[in-house]
Amino acid sequence: MAEHVYKVVEIVGTSHDGHDAAIKTALARARETLRHVRWFEVAAQRGYIEPDGQVIHQVTLKVGFTLD
Image (cartoon, one colour):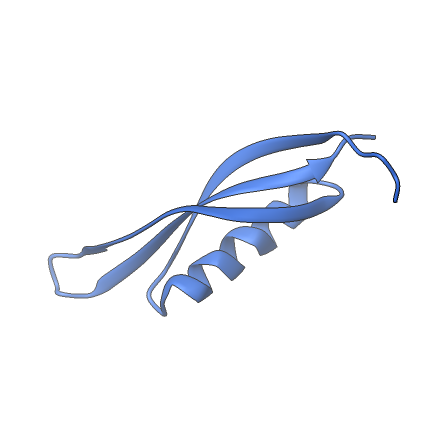
């Protein structure tokens, strides 16, 4: 197994469609700007209610990627 050094960043994803969708949204966006994304950890899950009653799911992720 190769040895790696990882950098960790924290990001937040949101979705009207649930926590899983919020995770996928956040990771898709992270992969557009970060190279070598290897893992993620769900640090927090929460939701909030908009004035019109819609529920927004929010997920905070720690994302690890290898350094060049």
